[in-house]
Length: 384
Image 1 (cartoon, rainbow, N blue to C red):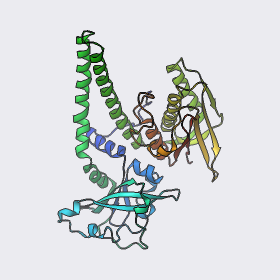
Image 2 (cartoon, rainbow, N blue to C red):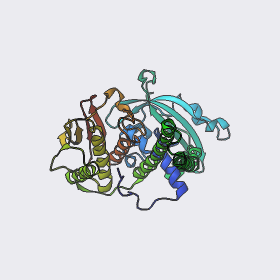
Image 3 (cartoon, rainbow, N blue to C red):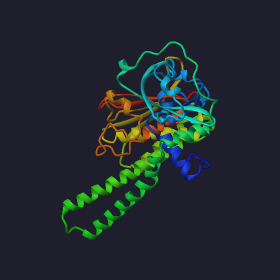
């Protein structure tokens, strides 16, 4: 399925774009704070983990995300080290308690590193939700005065965070694309040269090589697309979601004319948001519903809205397809995570991740309810 028009009007320089793209596409949440515990940078994964758009976090106290005293007894040794001490650049690993925008407590594995710059001291937190909540220490009571200089500029924080991904960025730009093209190209040439003389087993091996190379290429493209949509500038306006959904489903039907799917779209679905990005998010959700109803007799897809517990408007995309086990729901919106075998339902495992990032950019939430072989419902909000 086409990802639609490029939402970036003016892409940055190639090297900076790649570094920023890798940072934006990182699966772990990355937050940078200055010596005064003010947030100066966060990536899209941090938006998804904590439920806040990054614009609402910049220059806010870290206490909005992390409970207790960040510079307390656990991290004081790291903060107090001299810049000349080589250990000052080493990461300290800790368990922390986070706080989601909804008020839900989060158990976090944290890797914290310190950088001293002309603009002041910066601390970079790489955060991942952990399952063992009991091992996370209770937050300390009161914040203490932290060492460090003035608030660093956002560009400086981004540059320092990019250092963590420099080696990987080189591997992606130079070490993956070229070998993949060579593998794919020469395997096709070899298949033509051998023809049918070497038997079905050799042809099967070559086909598997080609398919794997193609899938890896799709993963790389998905990663780069994710970085683009994560950095796109929002242009909010009133939106009618029903025509967006109808156009997407028409394209899916035209692409797969043999399918018979009963479609129901509520007529008056109004929201506020960026037209291109919301349409792209809806496209990924509907493509997901279309794919996972492919083996369902009497397939049905519905798009509508309902009222949430607190009165907010909640939109949904519902299908009666393969569904999934809610025990694995935490994997849904992470890059390259799949709940079904690629042989059963093809794809790169990026569609729901991109939908989550796009809705998160609007300050909204995306979640799901499902059961195996009983379909799935994806709910999302678009705060005005």
